[in-house]
Image (cartoon, rainbow, N blue to C red; front, top):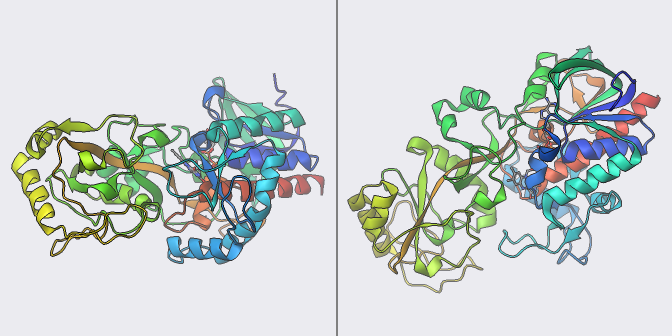
Length: 465
Ligand SMILES: Cc1cc2nc3c(=O)[nH]c(=O)nc-3n(C[C@H](O)[C@H](O)[C@H](O)COP(=O)(O)OP(=O)(O)OC[C@H]3O[C@@H](n4cnc5c(N)ncnc54)[C@H](O)[C@@H]3O)c2cc1C
């Protein structure tokens, strides 16, 4: 049993990638470290459990990466996906840090593998974790605990005693009892507020009730709210988040990667009224998948249906659930609860507008529609070969961008503009500093690891200073 009356140097709240990177860095710098993870042991590691890869700059190809990815190219990508809504100073710092992260993670026991087929063409830019996010986390926990980091599960941080940017202690609820735990420095790595449906509703209204949360139910944003209430400056738009279209049959929480649907570009997407509402073939899927959660969120009842036919069935990685199948478009509509005539008309109008072309999923091909609103700019093929298929989709919220402001040392910045003396933040809880909007696959883990490592190091330095 961990002795919670012991005075720790560094207290880390959270149990995912950001928290573990901070804990390991602090321990390696000589600090006595305690990690408080709200989830039970089996569910430790929040959204990190569901991840597959991390985006890091590197100069050359490696055994698992197919080519170089320079810091400049990383910055160009980040600028483009965020449309400039990023703190340039922090973003460039993170990218610079990412260059040494792959090696550092390997030193902490994490292993990589070549990119998986059919997963957004990331073989050059992103390093895939051997065995996935849970194996990666297990490696970090093994290393942390081997080094002497104490970890307590089922331990939710419920209060933080701080004044003028100085952390004194925290209250944590463990096995129904509240404990006051002191430390010389504090690292907040407790995720975003995506699992707090009431909080999402404040910004999205009733549509939030139809959102599915792709990851952990434990990221309720309680620590984010506490810190802001106690004087930490917040940054980021509360409605901005990473959201993709996921199978509507997925569970409310923790459906993970196997409920994501990557077949939008191969069919058409209609809403409850059987109407199309966006160009399904606007660009390559890796550049567009992260907008579909918001697009579906804007539709009536926050539901949509991806419709395709036999010719596309084997072109993508399927969801955990089988597609709904019928021998005609009208029968498919009946099974989906849509108006058969309306869906029949939408498909017929779409089919009539498709121009002949050379279909090629690997290129921005010339298969497109003409005189159709909205258009389908690439990969448009008639939906005519039975059986016909559909996947119902809903917005799947990955993580939110509302954040505690931080500086390059990962110290939180107070509402008076001063950096806190001994309070740091890393991961989703501060991701909005870098991600004002948009997303490039693999950056969530880069933010957590880069700022987690810096936070842990800084917290240990403070404790020894
Ligand atoms: C399905 C899915 C797939 C993803 N795939 C990728 C990917 O391949 N690559 C990528 O870069 N990103 C991916 N992401 C995003 C990525 O998971 C996050 O950006 C990253 O894991 C965040 O790390 P973190 O440590 O900040 O948060 P988390 O890993 O979510 O950890 C937060 C932790 O805080 C704990 N906690 C919450 N509140 C408290 C409290 N009050 N007290 C104590 N502990 C608390 C939680 O239990 C949790 O363990 C994916 C997300 C999902 C949902």
